[in-house]
Image (cartoon, rainbow, N blue to C red; front, side, top):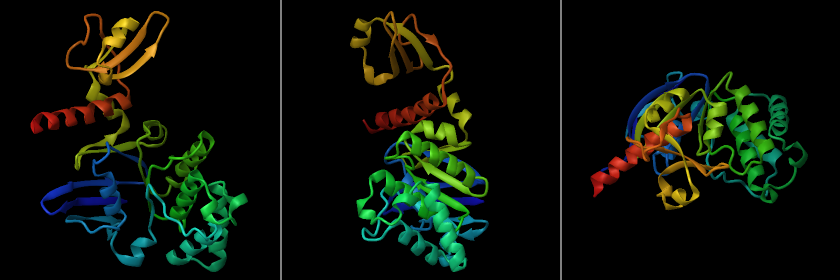
Length: 294
């Protein structure tokens, strides 16, 4: 179990992440929010890479800042994964296995080969990593995070740079790992959250806005999601930045938007998706802050 107890981070008098608390059991969780919401700060706090201004994060009751003990129980993949350019993938994973310890040399070698296969790098495992594409670097980063079968795995933008086949391979790999570990995925690709996660945490402006089941997000747009078919001329005259979706049909453009009142006389209420509920949640928050700032 990964738990955060009133954990927060302040720089001078400004909160980058206001104190929040939650508990995560085994499974995959999505970490959502716009840029600047505090996601990276939270991930670094949970990984023990940053000292909190208040509170604490623990794994099974042990602080994530508890040195070697914590390092062996956490796997972390930042959005930008830095490599030793002259090392091969196999050498990097061996080095990571030695740092984490807790297994014999033979066991480490076996795990390295298994992980290279899992992320589809076994054929290029002996090439210097400086020759790798961005997608290969991401896959290697995920492999190093899985070394030692950690209890908690934190991944920032896991599918960036991956083609559809590799994205599917990663989803299946993480689903298998989630049977024994807590996995926290920070991503802007909501389809990855819908297909992989059972719950989501949403941050905006350094504050916890939602923590719960995915299907609970749709309620933020319930009774406020409108759909109508506009002519092409009407569609071109709209403030299109307010539209959530616009799809051409045989007779015009099918539009969807979130509003407290019908945007047109012929708009009808529609059933919102998880993505539309999420957008309603973060848009409302940002709109209120904008009004306060004026």
